[in-house]
Image 1 (cartoon, rainbow, N blue to C red):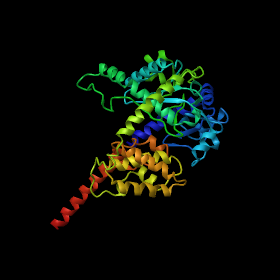
Image 2: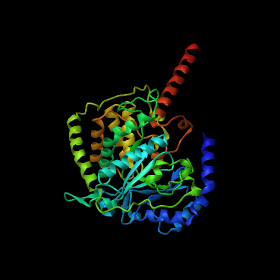
Image 3: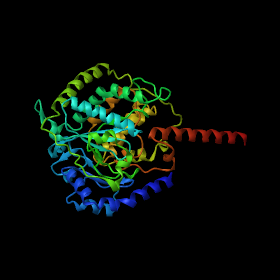
Image 4: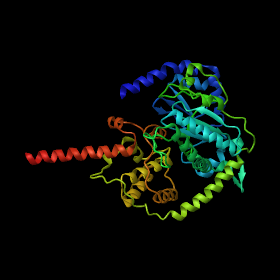
Length: 431
């Protein structure tokens, strides 16, 4: 595994200087970065936050220091460098100019991602959004952009710019709900029955997914390279999407296009209003069903569980962090529930962790997240690497090479240690 990582790093570093020295690429990235928070990535880890480009030349200067890719915010800021960890919602709202809707399509299979992208674009067009940006993610997915210009700036006296990430999340969930049947139909027609069951609980390994946004969420900038594939996150037209092949993203053959579509003012108003109407009905239904019956749900029973069996990323979170606390809370709640931790112990650990944070989360926010979680069956925390790298806690050990999710790490570690204990006890009895 280590050799594979080394190969990937060598492969991308061979082309970074040549690729990012291209003035057209620098210009495209710089223009798109305006009013956005940006963060360079140095193969395995991200640079400091917040950051921004002041000059076009900043991009290549970071590359010379080892940057391999560049990521930026969906949120648009008056002065990105004034963002500070621990800012109140009011302070962030005062700095935020607006936000783009960025639909991040994730799948193990590029062909399925392509199908989902086309279905979503058709749905957006049907909802009145005629102008969208499309780009390759750099791996096996696509990014679809509906710019801030397309959204109404106020709804019922509420500033739309203040409603991040709530409104983008609602729109994303609405799109998922309205397109999932068509997506299943399309993918089912392409896949042999022996490998795929045509129903509405399609396997995650087959179905593409839309990734929900979070506060200060970053995505790969247009024309940034991708560490794993060494491909460019190129911008596409709708016609090019149909015939897209990975070789089209060869970094030495890119042709520059503008990722930001020429939208009309408020052309996404109907989409947003429909999504909010759907959400109100959906939220009401969920509230009626939310009786808290899953508060003590225990999907896994582990014997002799200890914090020593937690993966390095979780141990680092539990020490207290300065950035990404809300994302970390999401991880801890879902991890603890997935491993069957007692509700009382779970809450005790969560509140103890929060006190260690540089700027603790408000208790009201934690209570809300716990309450919401208890209404549903536990879900696994996000898979390893990028999510945890984004909050600076991913420091893998040798055991991490064997797993894809923190829950898998704990289960395997717990099983391994219990097996060893039993073996040692048998040996002691014999002697």
